[in-house]
Length: 214
Image (cartoon, rainbow, N blue to C red; front, side, top):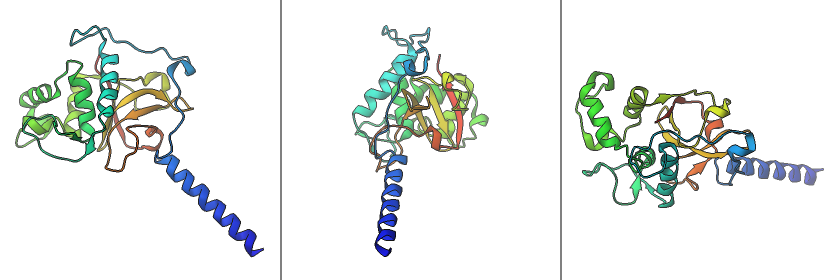
């Protein structure tokens, strides 16, 4: 009887461990596409950098290209504004995704802050860092992007290349989905992150914004 109890306890611990690894994306989740849910892939009518790729697709592709560089997580200040040494934080995923699509957030956010300082609640304006703060990006996207639903169950309203803002975090919505049709997120959250494209939306209860540039 004692041996049986120990075996059951061991099994339960293994299952808890497996769930923990799966929950925190150390075990990869199966990926589905828009086609699996009869959702049409969205293409915007805007091509801001005139490269022949619409902005929505461009932003998504750029986010994927950025994470291929496997940036290391570290919060640093750069005189260049954009990190140039292989390090970065969550906002840099968005900044580089948009920059290579023709949206220079460093300049755009700075211009908006200069013109609307009270809205941003900033005492000292610093072009090199202001666009790398989640709270500032939230204000900027509220004013300059298309605001969309924050209900993740409206799966047809979430599309690859969108921007999702959490209370203290931000990322680019992936074109991959989980078995429920809920999108993965391309993001950079900590030093111990194994994958940069993760199935996290279901586990976050702090979504404060969902945006599309065009």
